[in-house]
Image (cartoon, rainbow, N blue to C red):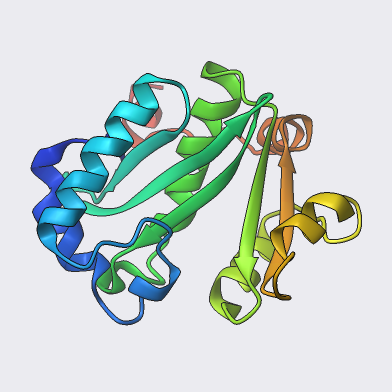
Length: 185
């Protein structure tokens, strides 16, 4: 479902990213394919330096369909940025990708908290964040960070995902048996 960023995926990802329903909400915008290649190369190098964690989201057949990233990593925290190509909206990929990414961040890479800044005009992302049982609406609880994000204009809402709340949620999820395990029993 997720893999480290690779220049070979750039053409497919660029075509998905430039859709008008996707492009306005992508943090690392590129006006041309060549610029997207350059940004992807910079992202790969930034991950090697520990500044970002970036993955390509894949569909069931291994095709790239979007990206999920942790930007501005500092003191065990960072900002989530994710996008999916328009043909993949509303099909459950976002939740699956976030679960896999959060597991990697919290349990393998030592991240303690994830912040999500969501544009107030992006109702789709706001609704998705509210549905996650491990998110905290943090406009008031992280007021100084919220004010910093909105220093020039009231643009963003702020959500927080602490590791302990995500872990508690993960432990409460029932184990789902794979069909092949059931046949063996």
